[in-house]
Length: 146
Image 1 (cartoon, rainbow, N blue to C red):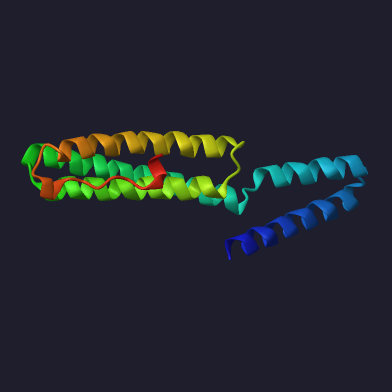
Image 2 (image 1 turned 30 degrees about the vertical axis):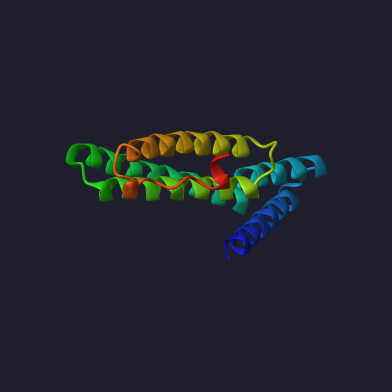
């Protein structure tokens, strides 16, 4: 749905540029330059998805930090579990985002760096849980942190 919307917007922008060029009598090279400028300012659905996922994972990680701070103040294990859940959500979201991207893009590297930071944070949460009774120990992460 989003892709179709951007396709339609791109079509109308190109059509507008074409009509404008015919009316003003611009050369073919100038037409190509104006089309390239329009296309460079329009985000692709992959870029939109990446931005959304990065913002969402940042919010989830902030919630994880908030719950961990609450755990440190109150000592309630439920806060530690909530912090771990939000951290794991962040890790999985970033892992899935990375799988959509090529390894050579800067977006992949950004997602990888954030995911590794989230994995380190989860390790810290896990070490904190090891100070509690074995019932409250946090599980190991699966493939996302390896």
